[in-house]
Length: 285
Image 1 (cartoon, rainbow, N blue to C red):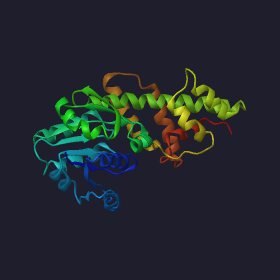
Image 2 (image 1 turned 60 degrees about the vertical axis):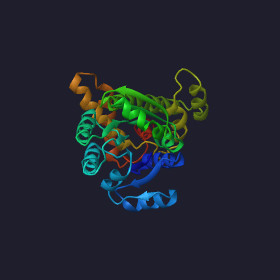
Image 3 (image 1 turned 90 degrees about the vertical axis):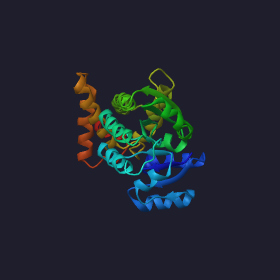
Image 4 (image 1 turned 180 degrees about the horizontal axis):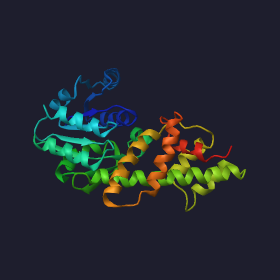
């Protein structure tokens, strides 16, 4: 089964490498052609000049791009050449409505679309340990599963098209809450002049322990915010969550607060830092 990857950013490159390692990847496409060419030469796969060419040549299209308009633009282009029976797996984080629009475009070409956003950050993409939440046809998922298992440690079928993105929205809201809690608590600990390495170690082993505290606590308290997940991208995701929540009347208190905080940091030029840069607003000078 031939698979091609569209989008070779921080997440996409790691996914592509793991798909190639498992023997599934035959080609890549990236908007910046030099990036695709470099990776293709390293992995001994094809660098496609256009998404239309990739779509015409593979059985499974893997896609990871930044925004809703990018997803729809790529799908529109692929629909010109895609073969019936092809499965497009979109691992971007976009709205449920965008997923439904993309699925409808491909259905006209007898191709399947799975909205399959992931969680686990750059580390998960690199290590093949992502958690994937999938919306769409279950038979299409089973066809793509051997390829997806090369990039993930958990795949969960959530239901109809759009349900994968809705589940990812839950994840992004929860990540915002964890970020708020961890950054504020560690800023409090630092203001108490506690030994931060010991605070992080002991709390990580208790009921309040979590991945973010364990992996980002040591770096944020040292003023290092190299991105695992860029703040500006989480801001984009939370704006999607905000819109979805308002459609149903769900609470947006946490979402609104985090968006406001992120916009302050983005205005200061910190949008490309890790989301743990929220610590900048919490720490006492």
